[in-house]
Length: 267
Image (cartoon, rainbow, N blue to C red; front, top):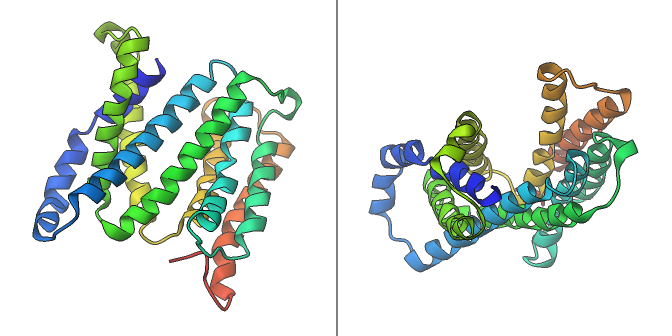
């Protein structure tokens, strides 16, 4: 149900549309934008978001969560590489050691004794490229069209359309099947998807892509902590050390440019 799960996560756009008409619709009407460029960016963002989610979900059929965490965190490395090599974005020197520390910390958060390379790992790694391009292109789009609610709504709408066609072709979508997971789909659609990506769009108004990717690596930290609190999962000394490493990397990547002569890693 990879595509149908994505479609359900991003099809819940009523509240996003409500926020859009309350906060941004009038402002957008008063300004002139290139509709073609806006549609191109929204389509790209929707495509990257759909691809990232679909590959992530399908990968878990062929690999475990530990491996998924290891290979997904590679977007921390991919984002600054894309920014530097494809878009000539100057990267503050502090980003590169922070990226390295984040990858080590993410590795320590996984089940180290159960790390084997399998089919699903290649899907996760490919998905990391989708997430990386989504972060980079969202930052570029915000410079042209600085309306986070509209961007989030448009991205999710187009992403849902992109996911709809393959879901009809490859999956048995029925109301009964969706209702079996209604609570999970509602949580994912409203919180982790809608509100999560809306907050991401707002945050990227003030941050360039590389620091965003480093901060996003905190998802592994929160997953480990809440897994310990809510699911009674064991939090070993090695995992705690991994958490500390990621926190150090995030703090260092944010503080180092402030004390440097030039803030290359920020807008």
